[in-house]
Image (cartoon, rainbow, N blue to C red; front, side, top):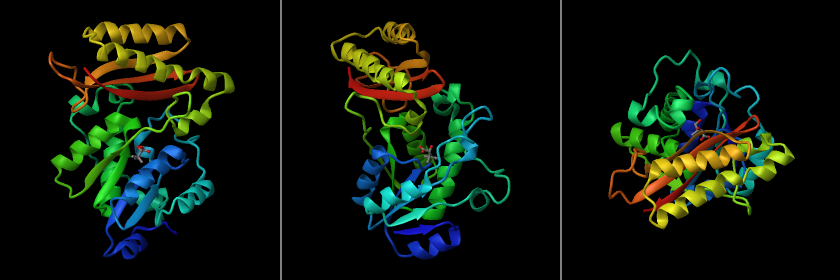
Length: 276
Ligand code: PAF
């Protein structure tokens, strides 16, 4: 496995290869490794990128404390059979202040996560487009755990006519249902015991929908109330269409229940797809 820090060297290394890439911010866990396995089916060279992207963090968020575990990440990637790790530093990615930015349309970028993390998807789109230009993959894998991010990237690739297949990867969970996330490491033991409740709450909402419930506003409020009773501070619970994350119209069948909620100082997100 090659570890490459510069754009020039990466371009030389990837010339003539059919690349599948998995963009990450490091602090890798089994969920990321699952995405690497998906990528390995979509190219003859798998590239993992590791870059903690300042542009997608608001000033009050955890950019400085975001867990950076580069050596352990590389060991895991090597065991997983990844071919190349691209790990630029900030000067390589942003040698001058990044004045050119990519913004998703507000109806997708400013809702849900975008409402509570203003500018988040502008930062994500800008770095992902830049990584795509650098890596020039034919396929890139994004986890469904970050469901809205997946839809935003799919929209960007479609509207900007990028020749890249965006491949969704399933969410990896622990046995008690908690979605794997780098931010799970922030949880205290008591919070870790409480954390699967987010998934259980969404699963109950999804079950109600599958069983025929259609008052989505009521279901969202019930889920928010249930989380609040268990000491969570929810930002949102939302029943949306899978395709565009807009509120369902009568007759829409392919739905997703999404949530973001704080447990102590840790903000977790999760979602479940459901057929109405
Ligand atoms: O999902 C992530 O880890 C990040 O948002 C991404 C896609 C690597 C962009 O920085």
